[in-house]
Amino acid sequence: MAQLTRPVKPLSVIIAGGGTGGHVFPAIAIAMAIKKQAYNARILFVGARGRMEMKKVPEAGFHIIGLDIMGLQRRLSWKNLLLPLKIIKSLNGANKIVKRFKPDVVIGVGGYASGPILWAAAKQKIPVLIQEQNSFPGLTNRIIGKKASKICVAYEGMDKYFAREKIYLTGNPVRNDVVNIQGKEKLAYEYFGLDRSKPVILITGGSLGARSINESIYNHLDAFQNAGVQLIWQTGKPFFEKASQKVTQGYEETIRVKAFIDQMDYAYAAADLVISRSGAIAVSEICVVKKPVILVPSPNVAEDHQTKNAMALVNHHAAILVKDAEAMDKLPSEAISLVKDKNRLHRLKERMAGLSYRDAAESIAGMAIGMIQR
Image 1 (tube, rainbow, N blue to C red):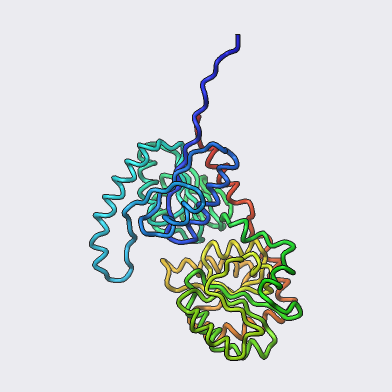
Image 2 (spheres, rainbow, N blue to C red):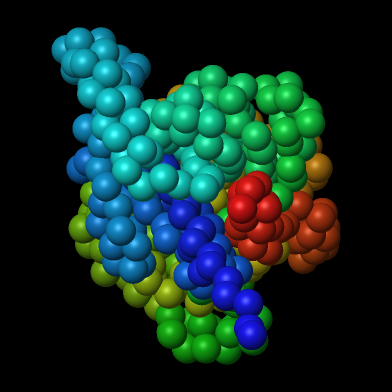
């Protein structure tokens, strides 16, 4: 007589955090990797109400619950008076979510909603994994890191902030559709209508653009055109109209201006050089596609973590750094000089090769599943 076996309960996973694409897209990549390794896993996202994860996560096919939480305003603001009440409310909400969903493991990717859920999970003795994207961790992760079982990082030297035995160097999850550029160069030139005989610089400042980068490019279009350099210029929505009007004044042949680039894989494939902010995910993507880069760290981020991200590459001689305050005068000439110097470009690509982690999402997913005691 055949022995009856009880059906195995599907894995239950909560992924918490968000606020920016740098948190949301890695979270979605981890969720998809978990589904590949455990197809029947139940995955619940927890984000902050009104933030981009409330739209992007459902678009990716996952369920999300929003907490009424906000971060500390770094300038004087009456909103900070509401913060203690919102923290108490979000902690109560997080406790209820964890008790109701009964996760086997909770993954935090940073952002406002990450803290309350990780705190609630640790309090209820549920294994916690943190995915820290930056080379300098935020306050929430530094606090919760003491209660986490494992901490997946993208940079070396993170034992300054976390217990060494908890740290695993996995890299940051990146979007496969963005970094899969092999064999796409010809299609990329056709897509943007570019001349294959002339060098191409990709300029990107994130979804909203970067004012210092945009202004420096805007004021030096003649220099790029006279040097025979083509630009794929992603301005972000706020600067797009101004840039578009300028490009119509005789720069149409060499400059492609976009508010947002849908085919980022084509943009990377066509680029000989990238100019970018140094958010963690942007840096990780650039390392995976192995494109020489000039990084212009944003000065408007907590604890200047973009400069620290950039220096992690610069210290390996794998990137060039231009300070935000110097971008107006220094960035165009540095970019033109570099894109014309094939030896320097090659050296930067070689040194970048050892800093890329293509399978980070799969590694983190496997680690999270391995933490579950069945």
